[in-house]
Amino acid sequence: MVMMAVILTLVWGGFAVSLGVAMIQERRGRRPGNGQGDGAVPAPVRIMPQDHEGD
Amino acid sequence: MAASRELFTSRWALVLAALGMAVGTGNIWRFPRVAAANGGGAFLIPWVAALFLWSIPILMVEFALGKRSRRGPIGAFAVMLGPGKAWMGGFVGICTLAIMFYYSVVAGWCLRYFFLTLQGPLAEDAEVVWTAFAGSGSWWPVLFHGLALALGLGIISRGVVGGIEKANRILIPALFVLLVVAAARAVTLPGAGRGLEFLFHADLSRLSDVKVWLEALTQSAWSTGAGWGLILTYASYMRRRDGVALNSIIAGLGNNSASLLAAIAIVPTVFAFLPGEEAMEVMNAGNNGLAFIWIPRLFADMPGGRVFAPVFFLALAVAALSSLIAMLELGVRLLMDGGMSRRRGIILVGLVAFLMGIPSALSMAVFNNQDWVWGVGLLISGLLVAVAALCYGVDRFRRECINDSGTDFKVGPWLNVVLAVVIPLEFAAMLSWWFYQSITSYDPAGWWQPFHVFSVGTCLAQWGMVLALLFLFNSRLARWSTR
Image (cartoon, rainbow over all chains, first blue to last red; front, side):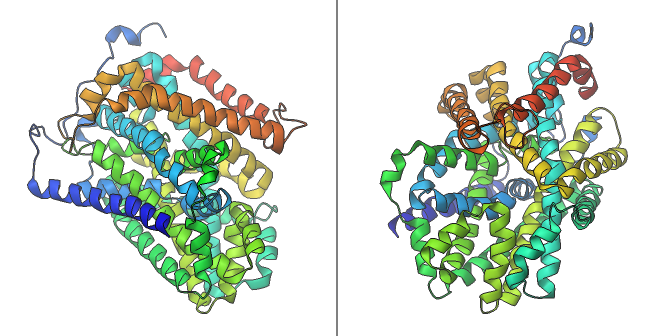
């Protein structure tokens, strides 16, 4: 039953803690550098016009 | 086009959708029996390790690819890595769609059994009912396959916020409540302690058995949804302010929490009603045998089983449906990336999925073959996702895409080592292990045959055909998915 306690603490406890951290982060509001609009889409990273040629 | 798309309205909506994607039937019917067959408590150690050494790193890469590219798998690979890599996203997408074709059949089975158990206990008839129902050529599974697809398509037709988000807000809390109810009932049965003891007893000598590690790694790889391209698809709808790292950890740990709940619901139930040897036989009866033959029998004998049998099958159906929604959305997203409207995409995906699922609904041989080929294929998908980070530059990917502006915490360079070294080694070990099983155990006489159900040949033939087509049309795919 030691193993049961260890595994349940690790998995269920870890899940609960990660949810808790996420909740705290949400309540604190924006983290540094979060000025972007939600819908903003970053520019495509490596796609170049010439990549579309020569199919 | 992409800038005006719908986004999840909150972090919780994204988390619930991610959990809905990850928690599927595999958590409920595969994890408990694989854990029981591989040493119980000893199995749980490598299973938790695999979460951090395979699943969560791959989920992080998927989250980052989707969030950054705002596209489905093909477009994400093409945009992030260059058009020459569109085929990699294509393999990830096709592998998951191939699974979706038979997974909706499974969702249909669960729905059918929910309705059956509502009418009364199946008891001794369970085996007869199952063999007359699934893969026997009966059209009932086709009907329920269609019903499951219709439910899933109906949900995604309402869009990301009105459909996927709203459905998961109901389905996932309901699933966890149903699992807690089933687990609470199981542990209060007389004799349930034997099952718990079996499940959590740690015979640490089993850790020297390579098979236990490989089974644990495979279970984690299949169960968390890492490498399926599903989180990538959902992440294309996440807000920029939402981080990658913590959400990946929540999805992974939430998935494993559901697996443990399911194991606590099932293993003690089996051990409470059957003597040790027979209980082990049941746990080795395969996914379908355990869920659709033995569980209905055990519930029929259980006080209150009349109520708990539908609870179990409703949980199974909810788990299946929440994962099916994600798979359908992946298909529709791929078409929308090419410029198709959601409505047209839904009609096309629904039609193709229904037709392609019919053979698996009618024949268990086809079902088993597809499960084998694309289940093992998922390991390749997982590797390709990790390779995406390597192609981008693994450290650059970690700094720019994972530790981006919205992150809750910075992921350290350990992730570079896991993505560049550990995951490729794990992949090689798992693929070799499953092929070794085919050659030595599943089909020693015909392992190279392309038309055998569990052969290496059938995997290579089907993957080869898909890869050949993807290479052939790579440029077109890249152009089409990045419009």
